[in-house]
Length: 154
Image (cartoon, rainbow, N blue to C red; front, side):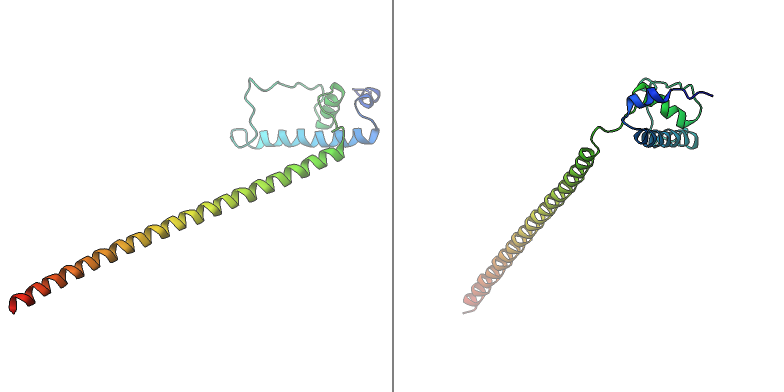
């Protein structure tokens, strides 16, 4: 039995046999996992759904995911990231950026909460001051009435 696509064609797509094996294994796992999710949850909207018009039906000559992955590699549909160190650095930068964004969002929320608390406190002070002023006016009004009654009695 002859391996199709040929090893020569596959090695044109990657730089070494080891890279080929790693790429093939990773892609085969992805294909297998997608197949499992589709079989286990055919009507579940949470499973990665691709609209039929967006999906390009892929017909493989092979049945097994390992050989399907090799077909994709030979066609050039799958490739290894050209600079793995750059990829790691990019992922680290994305992670750091996400962390900074989360901290900034948290800081903004805390500032907003502090501002709302300060406004609430100012409203409470204003309400207390107005109550105190009303109470004072009421006390003065009672004092005026008491003086008026006292002067009438004299």
